[in-house]
Length: 181
Image (tube, rainbow, N blue to C red; front, side):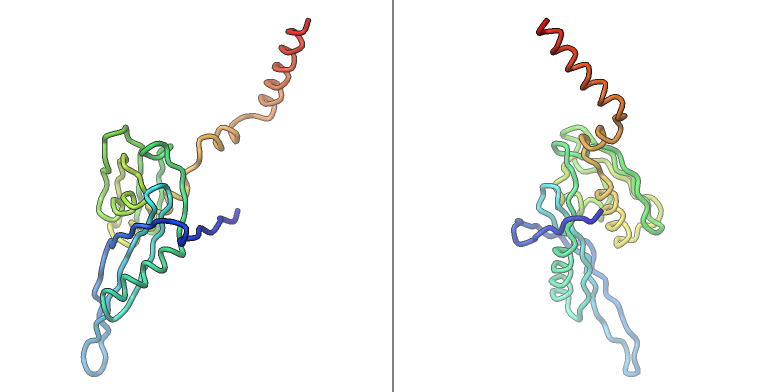
């Protein structure tokens, strides 16, 4: 199943910097420093993306990360202010467990996962990151978990047996025939 590409120009996207890392490359003359930035973008209504940018200066790294995040947008179903069902997802050594929460709970999650939920528009959720707490893997695990969310109506169609659907249609036609008699 190929996913649809989301046009970022049609959306009002909000970005949030999750992590900035200074990296050094050792060369003959000493160390060369550069920066990597991890950024999440979202429209606060069920669309979110993540990007990583590297540059010699921090603003350039952030700008590159935002551009990449806009190219990697995904959409997921929301149920009011939370998610439809519980999800466990593993990415590398990081595992995330996200649970829906009642209205008014807020976002109960660690740093990188919290940033993803804030820009994605999830207001009530309980999440726990297990294993590695690397921000890059935590964000990727959170995005992966949101990708696996299913719409409740599509799940009921998958769970219904074909024989149940046929019998329910037959019962409806029989009841209509009985009404005419």
